[in-house]
Amino acid sequence: MKVLLTGATGFIGSHLAEALLKKNYEVYCIVRNPAKLRFLQGLDVKIIQADCSDKNSLDKINWEFDYIFNLSGITKASHPEEFFQSNYIGTKNLIEIVVERCTQLKRFIHVSSLAAAGPCKNGIPVTEDTEPSPVSEYGKSKLLGEQAILYYKNHIPITIIRPPAVYGPKDIDFLAFFKMIKAGLVFYLTDGLYSMIYVDDLIEGIILASQSDKAIGEIFFIADSIPYSTHQIVSAISEALGKKPLKIKIPQEIGSFLIKVFQKFDKKSIINSDKLKELAQPCWVCSTKKAEHLLGYKTKINLKEGMEWTAKWYKMNHWI
Image (cartoon, rainbow, N blue to C red; front, side, top):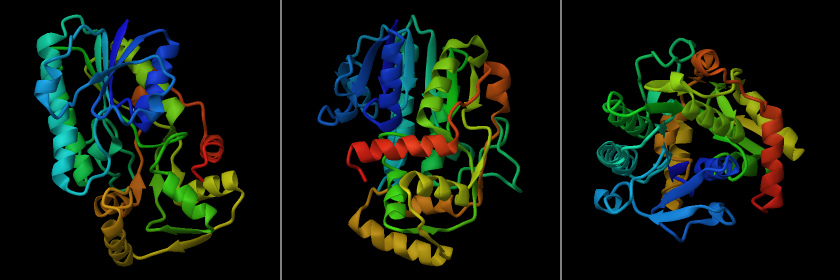
């Protein structure tokens, strides 16, 4: 089976590439910048240099694929237009050419985000039927990407996956929290409640959905069925590092000011003004019942185990 994977140079994409190879798929990866292949080193993948935001570059590809996994996009940007260009225009370009040229396609899997649906209202977990209400520019751009895919749901077999916060080896975003806790200090804005998922569990869910006819034309939240509080997340990381950090809750106004100062030094950090819009929300919990009932999906790794394995990988690779 021939598989095309976008976003393969990233955290989740590289894990998916490795898992697909283990299942004996022939994996092709669209890569915008061939200089950024560190997570694909040693993997028997075939590189296609192209950019989903540039439709002309996609036109040169031989579109004979059985499965397409679309993980391309960005999670942080210095300007909202960058989110729109990558997460919406890039997705729209890809699906349009796939509909036109990929005649043997068995499934198009699009990996979106819980951010596209938005946070909980009144503490009620978000379901796939909840009216989307994204609060960040990132979330709005991911919702537009979903809409571009759903427009063609009667033309090709599509499935949309919405993960919550994803963590694990090679993740750069949670690394910031590991570094803070290792330094003995952690700042937080809200006593929140969050859906989470360890990267290996997410990969298993993505592949499971790609193989199930019940997933055609559907959206799924793939997450741990148990949500975790801010303090549980901090405690899990602290235990994994053997630290007892000082926890400091800061008002949103001060957090906003500090983030603006921080952004002057690092414009594309995960700690940014757009992310603040999400971090200020007290509840990011999604229901996993649909994936459990239709796909028989269940996570295997709990938060404590996942954070321990993540910490070990960071240490072994000298990230912390």
